[in-house]
Length: 433
Image 1 (cartoon, rainbow, N blue to C red):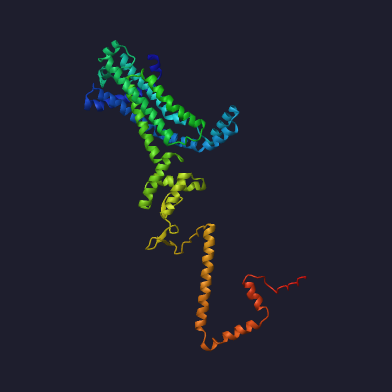
Image 2 (tube, rainbow, N blue to C red):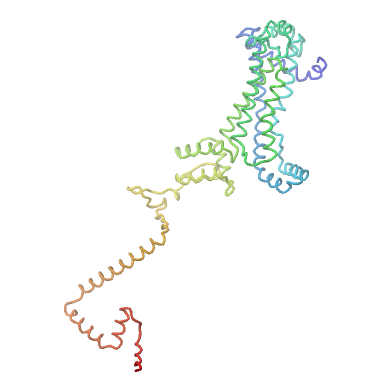
């Protein structure tokens, strides 16, 4: 163990130095030999490491989003080469290479933390065995061995024997209860973090190797933490529990404010953004402008939630611009009359109303009503004309009727109107007697 620690002294020495610096600060507040001083020093180490890993976390998000956009192409490859697994794998790797994506990018933060975890493990293991590692001298070593977290020594493990635990000034029951609770909390936080990623921030309807990998990690990581956690010192369990809680909170923030397109989280986010924009009439945050800009740039490639967002803005008289801002759209605004009916658009032009489709019976009844209305209108016109005519022109009507009687074929027309055939009638042949 000493040989391994000496080989990785370039990691263990900086980690031990950071812990000692934090211990000086917290030791002045809580006392140098207390569990609060040493425990908070480990928690502060985790926070410092995770802050340094934020750029890597951002890169992980971008890579994950790239994998999300590749899912339709990956599904096509699966369907095309479903009977040839080798060719399917080759095409997948070719797609990853062309787009510059990496399916293992979700593991980058964990891989980046591995050296720090390794160094902290050896520092705490040296405290348990009484070995000096890094900048921890004899006085700091004795102080760390006296520190207890909820009754469990900082360097104690779940698998330690009773004699080992008693040498650290604790009881076996206290150590196992504290370590068991911390292992359960550590595994549960890891499972919840991965589960919220799978249920809210990805599209589970598309079956791809990336989705299978994420689903596998959701169950594998908690089991790994539970199995290996029994061999971790209490100080290492504090480290992993703190980093899991940090990851969970960081992911919740990302899912809420920058969700994956097409996910349930995006639907909830765009619903909140719609209410905010329609209420204030503008986009205030830079992150919101970035998302609106991306939605506008997609054009016809928008998903269902993004189309609903654009339509909701149009109904509210707003329009999203290419730079991410939202302005009032005069062409979309509809003025309301006093009775609440739409009158004209923002440009002053009347809004066209589409006629409603009528059934066959409605069209027939409508036709009969139209003909009756036309007939009454003609009668009204004829009456009005007769009222406007001079009195000396009225006696001409009988003469006109007499002239019509003298015209040939007038009787045939009247008979045709009564239901007989039009034209001259064929004379009947005499019957043979």
